[in-house]
Image 1 (cartoon, rainbow, N blue to C red):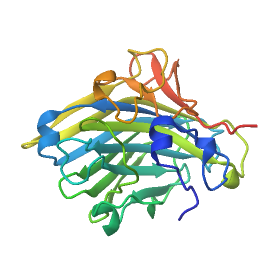
Image 2 (tube, rainbow, N blue to C red):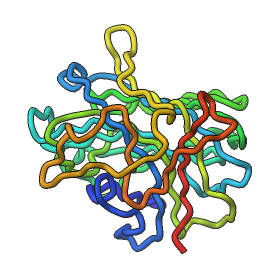
Image 3 (tube, rainbow, N blue to C red):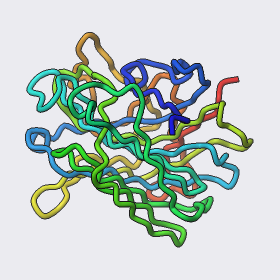
Image 4 (cartoon, rainbow, N blue to C red):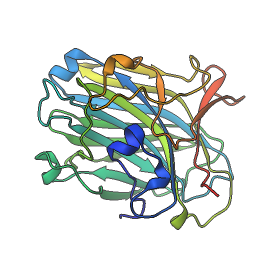
Length: 283
């Protein structure tokens, strides 16, 4: 279950290139990250979800892992559990129906960053169809720092996986000056497991992040790729990253090797634009 060995360190989320994976694997992680500062939720975290619509073409190699992710960044002031903590609810899936859940550990919950994910694998029981929009949602409880569930619906498939009890991971210290929620979508591919040819492109639309507010969910992040034409780098400052330098609700490249872009496509679910995660490996 360490096959993907996705590098979720500070150098990947903020500065690093995926091709610089310390395992020596030629890996491409193409994703975008958006920020949401909801003071009420951050002061008293509870249940939240990230939802996105995803599709791919008939020539997508089966080894490509598509992912959606939501994370609570604690920041270095007024943190709840760990200074600079990053609580990650990452779920990836492949077109063959394999689902990868990036679980954490007791050590991570106690404040020790993980060196690798405690992967939990599930099977949907059927392959996903090309040229089909799938709605996917990851739900987590940020109070207990545990996953709750994964949903996928589309193309005649409707499944919900019960992920309750799986701890969120703390993969790295991230020194933002204060807390925020972040929402990520994208794809990853590693040459070591790339056994098929094809066009490694994954399309996204209508990404939403929401948090529980009483008996309903309240949207804190929504981006349908219509307000931007390009995705730029994150405005990182060190040793402390200033959240005020970020535009809330805007997309930024997840890492500097990301090939994520925005394109106008006739099959866009809403509007005219989609996000494109290109995980073409370096030559």
